[in-house]
Length: 169
Image (cartoon, rainbow, N blue to C red; front, top):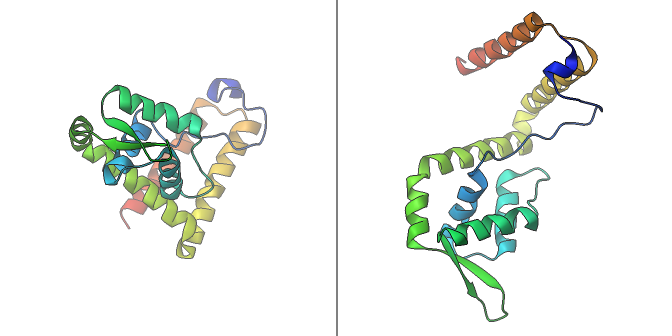
C-alpha cells in the first residue's frame, strides 16, 4: 500500500495543522464567554486566545460568522454601545442552549486548560518534549516509508498501549 493511500499528499516536512475545534465547539465556547459577561468581538477573540494558549488567536473571519450564527439562532443579541460598537449579550434561549450543552463546554474547557498547562508549566517540559518527539517520528515515518497495514496496526497498538500504561499510573 503506497504512502499516499495512508496519508493524502504530504509534500513537505511542515507540521500539518490539526483542527483545534470540532464542529460546533467554537460556537459553544463563544456562547460560554458571552454568558460570563457582555462582550465585544475583540473581547471574545482575547478570551479564546487566552484559553487555548500557545500562539493561537482566532481571526475575525472565525469569530464574526460564529457570532452571526449565534444571533441568527437568537442565542445572543447585539446592543450598540455609546461608541457604536456591538456588544453581545446572551439571551434566555442562549442560556437554555448553553445549559443543555454544559457537559460539552466542560470538556472543551478541560481540554484547553490541560493543553495550556502542558505548554506553560516547566514541570511538564519532559512530557511536552516526548509528545513532540512522538508526533515528529510518526510524521517522518509516514513521509519517508511505505508502511504496510501490519505496520500501521503495530504502531497504533504501541500508541494505544502507551495510553493504557499512562492511565494506569
